[in-house]
Image (cartoon, rainbow, N blue to C red; front, side, top):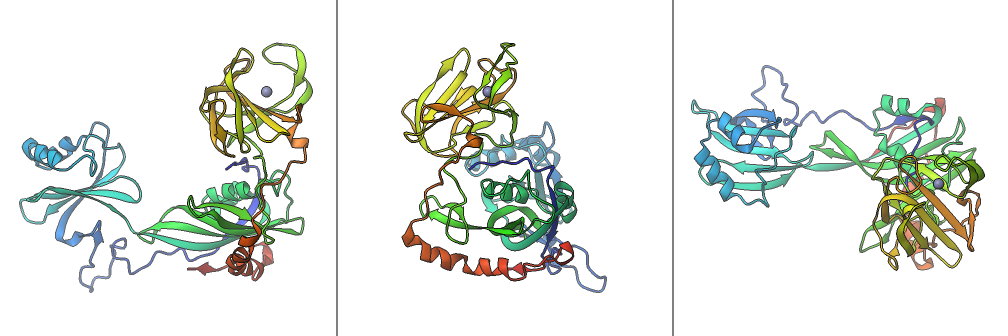
Length: 424
Ligand SMILES: [Zn+2]
């Protein structure tokens, strides 16, 4: 999928609903307690922590499993036993990542013998290594809860600031920009434009935020006209989803707007420009997107690779034929990722940004042909993506009913900011 994401200059005023306070009955994360109560039960990683002496630490530079164990009184012979008993597939002892947290549980007696080592592979996954008696390892996941939230906003002040103040993941803005890339020009939105979005977030242990799970539905009101978007699964096997409007019209187009993410247009299609390398005036029949070297380049539409090669001017380049009418080309790649004759899908990686050929810096030069004539894709009326099959539509309308109602009712922005709702 394409992402046209340069929204930092955008203006939104964002409000977020939802009760953010952690659940107070969660002993795991609320060690504080009133004096007269008995000691609260604390648990983590499936252990009752009260039963152990708990050591929390993080892997530092130069730490090895053996050196950490040594610090806690485990002999090299015991370490050898542990590392040869537990298979690599459970825990790769040679690969402790610097900065990752770990926990050691020790016996509460005077021996303070280490009984278990817990390594947090990432925010969600962790590995338990039982160090005593019966040595064994186990992988596990922290419980993840999915919370549905509703956010709404009125375009008013700086987006980044508003998002920051509201404590909302900036990725939500990126998702919106992505969904609406063909419907709304985010560089030309107006003060007073407003939106409402229903999305899901992941929480670890019900409290620790772990990113956006999905954006289920949204409405963006631009110059008084509502634009709906509903996520719907279009492929049962791959679970691929797409966004459609209230009439089951796809929000996607036949072509993506850009062949790279997080890019900026550094040179537009123009009949005359001064060439920075050749130092002369000539037409620039492409659009240049500056992006860091190695950034993936996507096919902007489904098609067949008709060229994948190198020339002195183009550097590494790929050319794709989409239909009899449309052809696109991508230049100056550091590396090509497709071969001639290969079928590619929209959004598939065909190469990586570089500066091979006549280029001053890393960018991709995107060229576009209609009926064999090179044109500016941004001045073309381009075809829509394939519509939703008729026989799916009734199920789709049923599916979006509830979310549409949620978007329509309470669609209020009194004082420019109002919405409070949590769906669970
Ligand atoms: Zn160019």
